[in-house]
Amino acid sequence: MLIIKQMLLLTIGAAAVCTPLCAQVPGAKVGSFDIFSDVGAPAIAGAASYHEPSQTYRIIGSGRNIWFGQDSFAFLSKKMNGDFILQTQVRFLGEGHEAHRKAGLMIRSSTATNSPVITCTVHGDGLTAFQYRTVAGADMKEIKLTIKAPDVLQLEKKGNTYTMSVAHFGEVYVMEKLDNIDLGTDLLAGLFVCSHTTLFSEEADFTNTRIFNTAPDTLIQYKSYIGSALEIMDIANGHRQVLASNKGSFQAPNWTPDGKTLIYNESGRLYNFDLASRTATVLNTGTAINNNNDHVLTFDGKQIGISNQGTETKGQSAVYTLPATGGTPKLITEKTPSYFHGWSPDNQYLVYTAERNGDYDIYRISKDGGKETQLTNTKGLDDGPEYSPDGKYIYFNSTRTGKMQLWRMDADGKNQTQLTFDELNNWFPHVSPDNKTLVFISFPKDVPADKHPFYHRVYLRTIPVGGGEPKTIAYLYGGQGTMNVPSWSPDSKKIAFVSNGIF
Image (cartoon, rainbow, N blue to C red):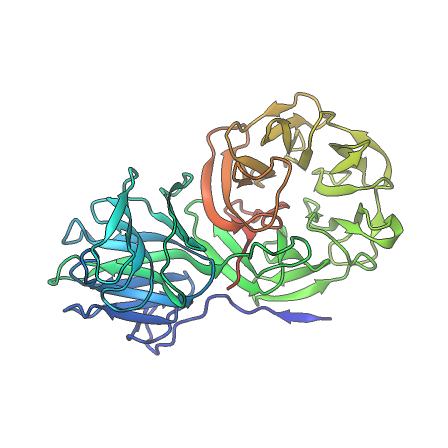
């Protein structure tokens, strides 16, 4: 059996100190970052540390200020080139000594104290600002945001445009943009803390921290791919943990009902990822070796449905079933293209999206195949059908009102009801095993409503199963393959998904 050893994206820092947070000396690698430095020689030395189980960075920093022509602060950084994104969630520790103590994200030309720089800055009193110095030694300039004390921060470089995105966890981003800023190449990007005084140090924790290059504009989707990170997340607090990474395209993890395994797609094959050992093994799908990312387990975990583009269907996607442990696939849908999305709780029916007569609608079919039953019949795209655990409803997404929105219908297709109404494009509603919550992926409003492409800045959000105001639980770079299939943990407390980047 083929065993694929997965490489951890984040590695433990290099210091040999037997505490959960291992103190780092200046110049040492810390987690994903290359170097820690005290810029501007603050009177009190700073420190940075990384805790692997929680994947948390802690920075202790002093320093007079990051404002006039000379900066003084603690900086944990990585050398970056090209276009990239830096993300984190930040929390000050303690009451603090100065209202203008600072923490956040920074991109600068060098560690010189007067270097050109751009910062996404949150102050101790909640003041939030996009601050920048474009000429060495000049005073800083800033754009003050109306939002106070955001804890979710993102700073993106694309060419000479820099975008700052901030939010209170649970909300969508507030954004500001700076154009025509040239900081040069070989930039330093990372996390910073400044105490705004020479008398004290301040501390901050940084979680859900990611730094990665984005897909080039020349990338042709479905022909070229960038890296993937397999992640799990606690939906109550949004804490994310990277389990493995790969230079290729992980897609669409399922969580098995026993809670021990994730099943994901890569390069047309399915893999079992063992959560205890963090190793992956190929799932035997027989002749079905050109699977897309529409694969779903039965509620009891004994069978799996897949969508494969094989020679017998002339390369068109068709729905098959086979034992969850692997075996010979059984063709279920004679008509193509058909894209599988869900089982009924009694394992008797499958629901899927299919193109018939030039339109995409939702269909149901027996586990034994045969005649399909059409459940939706509207112009535009209906997609992503999934049964509720009690079998009463099927949740799906539809463009019938303009944007892609979430809908619910009775199991027989009646009483089709819209659940979301915002400006984002909402895809793939997945019902928690306790039948209380839907989790789904939201694409920006500038993405066409009927598309769910790779490599966009997307949100993972939740609503109650009966509808309500969406809550954002993850801010990530992803899209197609991030969460196309049911991915809840059996206890309804976590989800699995894929994020992307060149790590």
